[in-house]
Image (cartoon, rainbow, N blue to C red; front, side):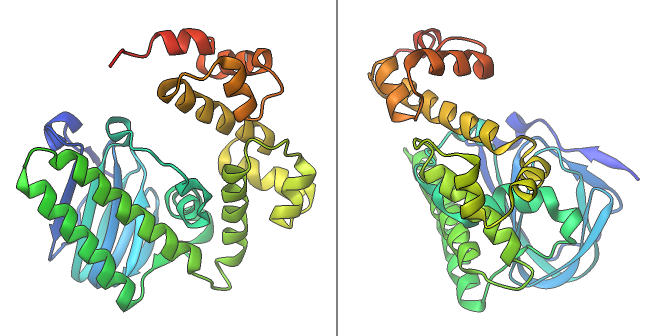
Length: 290
């Protein structure tokens, strides 16, 4: 099995880390490729097979899926396959996620489905209706138009269009309900709940109630999908919110500890140092002055 590495991301994105590629007639690929940025794929028409790592899945009109950075993939047995690739580098964009994490569909489409694709045989893909696909393509066209304009501020507007597209697709996934997707949606709803209530003193018992799972099943599933326990994930979420507040506000460390659900500033500092490798104060001191 051959794999090629796509060129350096700075050469691909140049001045804007977002790119839209329309491929009206995608042929089969002799080898897989991979890259160090994210890719969102929309199947506009036709059909074929998506070759991801060592698995092969059928794809057709309306399918939408995310490719995580450094994930090997390619296309086989294509038949009039028209797809759109939206390429973007989250490390460079750094756009505000705001409350998008409260949408179960966001976690499902961009976090969970790519990780469990091989286990679930691509059963949890997002498949858009004709109306949804039409609206998604309109959002893509607006993103393309802004990127092509190269006007002053086009980067800002391009990010806003990408955010609209991600939000729209996340809502579409949240409303998708099939027999195959129910357990998956259930776990996605749990992640959305944790995002919304991270500042509360959530316990494993609270999470089992929301997830409608036994404690054993919850711990096993969480570890399998997220690579850590629910409480470890919750602490990481709190620290992520604390970092945002350190960057964007003048709140004291104690006030940030209260807002992010830590019992006091000392506990926040211990967890922050454990995950980030420095104290909250040192982290704030290193933020460039604007």
